[in-house]
Amino acid sequence: MTPRVVLVGASGYGRRHLDELLVLQLQGEVALVGVVDVRPPDDLEALAGAPAFDTDLSVALEREAVDAVVVATPPHTHAALASLALRSGASLYLEKPPVPTVAELHQLSRLAQGRRFEIGFQQTPGVVRMVEAARTALGPVRRVTGYGALQRPDAYFRRSAWAGRRTLDGVAVGDGSLVNPLAHATHAALVVAARVSAGWMPKEIEVELGSVRDIEADDVAAFRVTSSTGPVVTAVGTTAADRVIEPGLLVEGERATLRIRLRDLAATLDGRPVAPGAHVPTLRAAVLDPRGQGDPWLSASAAESFVRVVEAAAGIPATTSLSRSGIAIDRDGDRWVTLPGIADAIDAVAASGRALSESGVPLTSHRIFPETRAAALYDESGVPTEGVRA
Image (tube, rainbow, N blue to C red; front, side):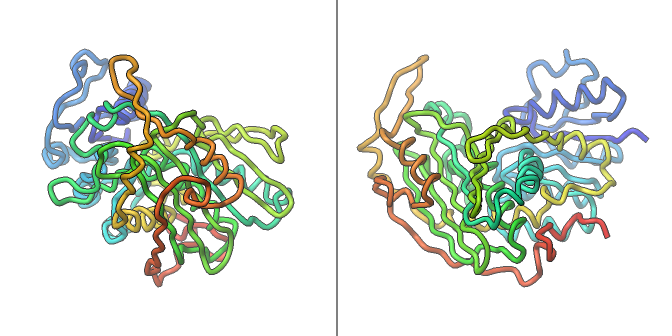
């Protein structure tokens, strides 16, 4: 039977999912039976194979049986929509970042009850495979760093009510440079650490957050995460870059260093190009086989360390004195704010593992010691326990 799919959220990143699902529908591989959003896309009726539109997911789920739900809405809406989808019996593909608290992640895991439930960290499976291929050359891994320096205009933070917010109407949002636009780099670094060191779990999290804009969340951030065993994980990034650094991952072993560009999985080993990794079409796999086995690197177990870091950062105030150092530039009819020297500082963090505050950026460092989950998230070989075939 052709899988019946509902998409929740058809703007922003959700528009990419809508276009991909429509192509799959035209190929006869899925039936896109519903689109849910606060308002329909302007061109919905003109699209070939246009699905039914609703503003309420429960209405779409009651109309007919649904095999898979894809959620690509603002982060603070994820928990409620994902719960509704899973309670209906459908599988779930939840766009990143998943939810802002570990309690919500655990609740979704319980609701899934073994059904396919994946989180849209699309680059992570390919990254893990590249690290696996380089394990012998790398030797024991000492440090894993996710990084990136992006430029965003003020319009980026005006695009919706939740952008740049910690909370909205009393609901946790958890926006921030390393947990939303650079979430792939943060998640991949944490997953790689667990893959190369069985038993790896955040024991101490050092958080540095700052903002050059008048926003509640951060636009400059660094995390340093240590475990009782295995590599140190560093994540560092900004959306106020004075120079763009494409998001990437640096895996430092005792014998060699692997650098991966996340956009296309282009990589170098000790500066020498290696065969790029293969992109895994995660959404396609999820909707074509909604009752099948999910990718373990997209599971809730694989995302838990990421959510722990997000939750830890949510309680840390951003240093706002950076705003006095920012430079505003008018371009294309909008205002772009940059922090001079931030790209060089991010390069220094990636190269050395130092904190941003140790690299010349005047941020306050906060140390958090999160509680750890009793149940093992990974098996003895470092593979997430959820979604692994028996």
